[in-house]
Length: 218
Image 1 (spheres, helix red, strand yellow):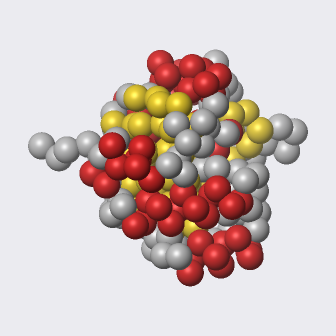
Image 2 (image 1 turned 180 degrees about the vertical axis):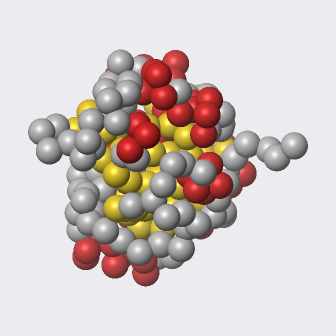
């Protein structure tokens, strides 16, 4: 039986929270780190472990055994200096794969130079089509690789999903994926509940294994 991956998410902003809780719901071990006590309290019961810690403290990260995690996601937003420093520390401590959120292209170039494995631009990339070699013919809008076999995608809602709620669709049971946001022309619903209704033209932000994503209706 394949062992579930271990993820560490640094920073509990909107992006970090969505990724961390969705990975946990999908059955993975998720450690969340943030220096805000309130942020940690708010997410503690929705992930495996949540620790209040300054992620710039290299010795503290060593004590956590951070190098044993498969993927680290640096979701620190506005503090670019901390974002870069934490990314450097994680690479130096031997985390297998580091994914970091970048604020802009210049920030992204710096992250690239320090060896970050995957750089994502949640704000810049919204709605922009990107090429990717995932085995899928869905109308793919955007793609974030969390690990070689686990991804977040943005995709237009298939016809089969129209006028149905997430509860009725039960995508986690049928396809082993989770919807972490629904985008329409009017609004973005983050962490939608079972009552959320899929309408024509909606864009789904989905997290799951590449195999599971490829099995979604085309």
